Image (tube, rainbow, N blue to C red; front, side, top):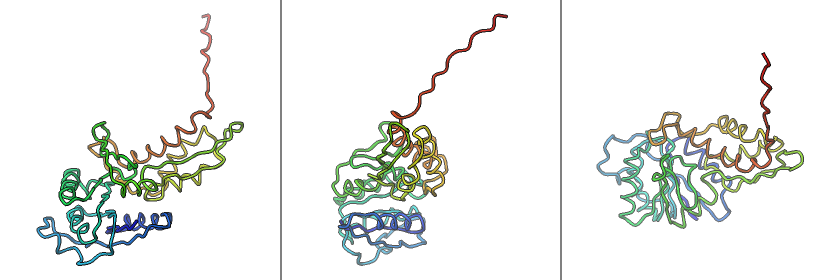
Length: 256
């Protein structure tokens, strides 16, 4: 698969580095540094897009400026891409209204588009844009699904010794695009099943998550916290059968 990543700063570069380091051998990843300065209103997006790009199947947008989303139809046209993934880890960079417009613009030219919010909610069949049930969007696109097989909503496989209840090994079946899931997985080995879920949350917090710390209106929480919960839930579900259950016996009432 040929991938063209659109970046504009450190956020996107870190994503690209992680994908390059852990992508399947058949993938090629090129990056385009989008213009640092864009006007508030872009009348002619094609003026800000090069005349040529390396041929691409999938465009990944990790832009840190809301105007970059307006360039994506022309980026897809010039590169020949048939699918676009535009990450929302900060609504200042891609507001919900613009994301909805972007999906429509690309659909009009025959290009599939997903806008996962946060980025690590992407799976092979759906993604989230908010907490409510109707804010989970199903999609059917083989290129995006192929990417999501390897990068998106964290999915770890955790091995636990049933006698000691210690984690003996982990496998990353799907990493977060930023690499956080791999970072957490490596540090869970040796921990007790009782501590693993909480420690996963702390490790996520220590890894520089790139999701926003502002309260998001669609979640009533920060996107960084939503991202952390997705990882913690994956760990918690797997260690739950091995956690020690503590029973509390009620004390006797005083005779006085």
